[in-house]
Image 1 (cartoon, one colour):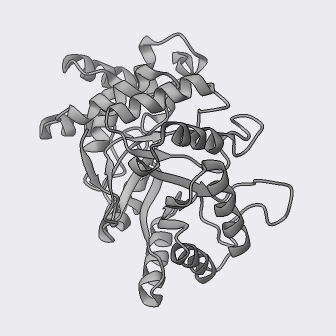
Image 2 (cartoon, rainbow, N blue to C red):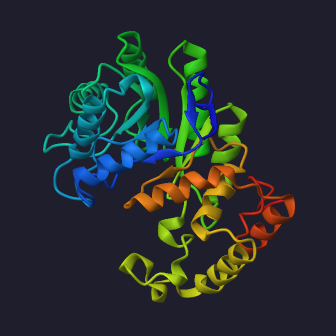
Length: 321
């Protein structure tokens, strides 16, 4: 396993992050523990979860995934061996303050996550989505207070626009508050919209990008050769089928599994710290881990750009002179 800095922070994390969204509502505790064990054995030290995982649409109990991860960490005695990331923003109860990024909810969310995860600190606490109804000063005040209390080490964002990243970084720098060190966004060969503004903003501030859905919901995972699940039903691909056919043929020519190739491409993007993979089976995890050893040439990267063209660079050059 290779390691890198956690964005603009000093901590070092594995180039693959283990996402836990499926743990609990989709796969049971025994299989989840086996995946967590295998990840640790292969050097994955970066775990990503969220307070809402386990609730709808995954199941019916928000927080159950954090609780499962907490049981594994405690049972294995590995708290100091992992960099633990979670998130807050989504609805966690019926109350009007049981959601969003108000100082009230952030403080309650952190305390609840600490209990479920059975730990005294969260290494990377991420805003799961932008909340435009709450002043940035209030959000940063809440996180800075939690940092000073030792309950949160680093702050990250998720699903932020480029200008939101700049807004949070600049206000934090001007006021001495905790800066965001990572941004977690949807990013893959098949979905490159973030290259317009999010990628340039993260790069400018030295932040790390944590791509979620790195295989575009399975479309980059060899979907045309899979018939075992409805998620891999080729009939749902529509106009993208021709691109996927070219992509899978390219992978075959180079003797690389399509799922491995999709992760490897992300690892070749300079702003990417670690793609977040959410395996449902152990073999999915091992496939992602193997991508760390794949070297893609400039010709390979150019060929993939032709199959999956991005937006044409960053804004505004992508759409103006």
